Length: 471
Image 1 (cartoon, rainbow, N blue to C red):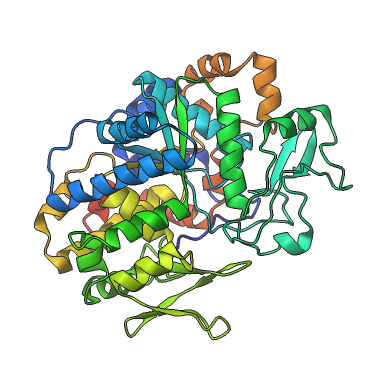
Image 2: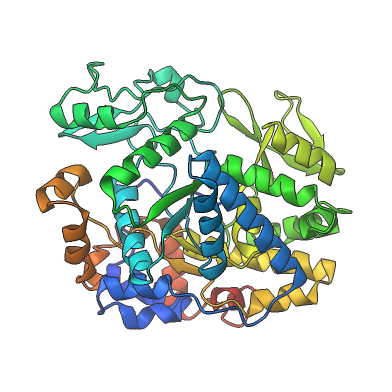
């Protein structure tokens, strides 16, 4: 649903513009620019008890706890460990949702995980719980993203895939087999000593999808790279698909009775998305697909809600009734996967879980909460709306707050003598220093327009959407 950041190398605004805009959108952030990164990490993982509850929220949180426990068991954790992950959710409902589905040692993921580790350890938490999207695509031309890793001075293809498998292919498609190979441009497997060592640590198995392979690879690497006191639990769109199906199969769930009810709620949300895209928030939440994607062999296909049915384009010939039972069955069968909005609805907005995100998420997520509030008003659930309004820092900036120029984290970690020295080194940096030149913000045209609107006072602070940035 949200658009991707601009690929241009041109910067459209300054670091000062970005910092001022972030502080405007998230006032809690302003005092931390000159404070140590470790203090900021501790703050974003600090959760006070909920002031307002509702039956809908408590039920959504119970289903999310079951989802966490199920995901933990699928990852190989014992029953008691799985229950411990569920208990920690209730005590500290925070999810890292910033990095996409990337191998742990990819810089965009590694330094964000390092930042999260600072916050978790500050509060003696035992579980690092993440969510990553499974519907993103390979990027062959840029040699970046989920199919690539730079290690030992070379950019390597994780699975040794030919270009025909990578151009436009979705990492979530169940079109395996995928096996770790770490090949270079000459098709040599593990062509340097660092790659040889890494390949030996990655699972020697075949996987149905690249997303599943990356998830298994991260699970294997986490225990070897990061302190054993913190365990990794990864959620992806397949876990979330089952969570949504749990909701839809439960007649007491808001998702079953209202979201997939008579159509009033979802139609109101789609109408307001179109209105947002005609105003000052244009582009931040787009109708890329209507609530779900169709999962095909090599790609995901957008769906449109028409006359009570989700329909793909004519080339796909797929459609499913937008009813609780039919949607649940399609999710269980992996015929469809949730859109980012629908995923956030069940993992965060309804259960009241804080999410840590990057440059686009800190804007589109509050707008998603606004869209949800419109739907809740249609369902007349005043207790849920009050609970949402009382949320504290429901969305925070937690991805790329530690941005390093080092293209090979494994090399830096080995040179430093492990993770503990890196944590000490970076925790003492001021946030303004750790976040670097904020280039991902500055090269994004939408962020440039937003920064200009904030600077000249044209962003409407009294609009209905604005309040959802403050909670």
